[in-house]
Amino acid sequence: MINKPLLERQLAELPLYTYFYIAPQSLEFSERIRHICKSECPMYDKTWACPPAVGEVAQCQEKCLSYQNCLVIGTIVEVEDATDIEKTLLTRSDHEKLTNQVRDLMREQGVQPYILSTEACAICERCAWLDGLPCRMPGKMHPCVESHGINLIPTLEENGLDFIYGTNIVTWYSLLFFND
Ligand code: SF4
Image 1 (cartoon, rainbow, N blue to C red):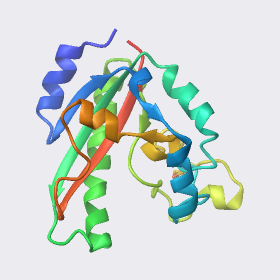
Image 2 (image 1 turned 180 degrees about the vertical axis):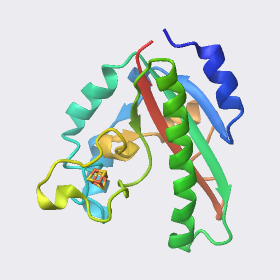
Image 3 (image 1 turned 30 degrees about the vertical axis):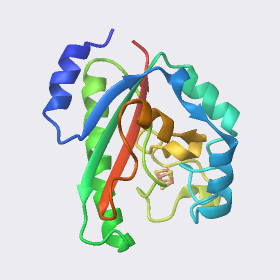
């Protein structure tokens, strides 16, 4: 069983804006989010971390609900100009590093979390998905939260949080599903 007090002491030492547990059943899974991926995201069908590679929303939901617990972590950063997409996306790598740090803390306790994080996977220059090959680093890549049809906004609101705080404030969230 995961030692939550220990984990929480360790989380408190990281530059996280927020962290809290939720029941996976409380998440909202929606075909509407999948539709947005398909119709608006340039990364649709480009990586193993995105649809359709991640499977149907119902399969993603089943996978998430197969875990007993979920840790939500969030980071927040102020940028000079959020419309500068390149610079804004640079802040994502810090969030990804923190997500992996939290993963490692959980692994130290013998817990293997299933992780959903931000945006498409950018580990390889060209994703193996495009060449019909298996993912080169399945243990390292994290599908994005939205790829699983998850609408995180209600979860954030229930916990007194927001997705958008202002023009030049960027927030990133990851979900780490685990079994106690
Ligand atoms: S690790 Fe490489 S092959 Fe796997 S999803 Fe990421 S970019 Fe694609």
